[in-house]
Length: 268
Image 1 (cartoon, rainbow, N blue to C red):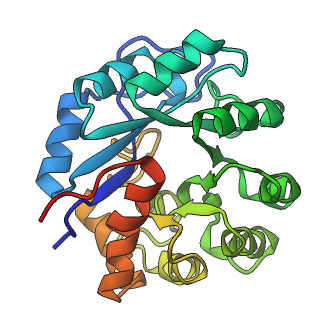
Image 2 (image 1 turned 45 degrees about the vertical axis):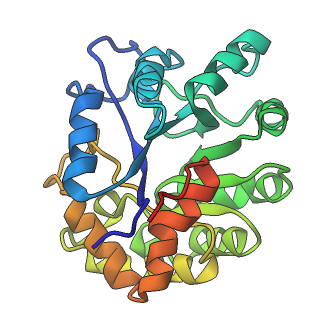
Image 3 (image 1 turned 30 degrees about the horizontal axis):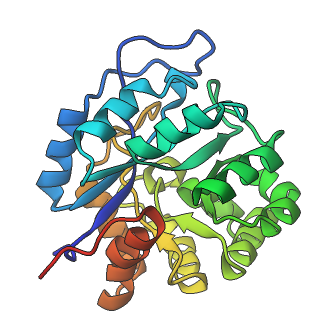
């Protein structure tokens, strides 16, 4: 049973018009279907991440946020020179952070990291990183000096065979020192497939390294994945096996993300 106020910290809404420089072409995924998924799994809140196939046009995500202000928050993708009015519009809609993505077409990379950091400092936001695992050691010095929270998507894309390599060791060091990490994407990283047994050791290691800075995400609707599509229950089971202590798991599912994304704790 999920704790009261559980948060799915990683999902996408998808329309029908895509940028040309995309790395995949997904099926549409409207906000109404995502809300049904939240209801079906017992999640109280959700966080929408601007999907790469829409580039820096955040309008579809913003519509979903504005229609569900109490239940949803958003992470935007945009140029660093949006201007005061543009930043204000994102914040008023429910955006709480910016995503930097070096892995797929349609994202913005880390070249303007200092500019994005300045924006996030002013607005009280965080920076979310989707990067190749081999780039984590290269970026680590800059990320460790950030004055805003840093959040790594999908366990840094660290596959099981990289957990003991430089990428895995560096990510663990960063989260011990203050970075956040999403215990998500097991289905993308696993070499063995469901029930993703090979993902348990590194998931557990991250949860132990940063018990107050780990969060969970479904990665709904699992875009660009070509294997057997997971369901959220399978992915929640990965968390339950990797973090068997109920109090620690409840922190990952509810307490930690409520603090990071600004969701209120529901009344008893």
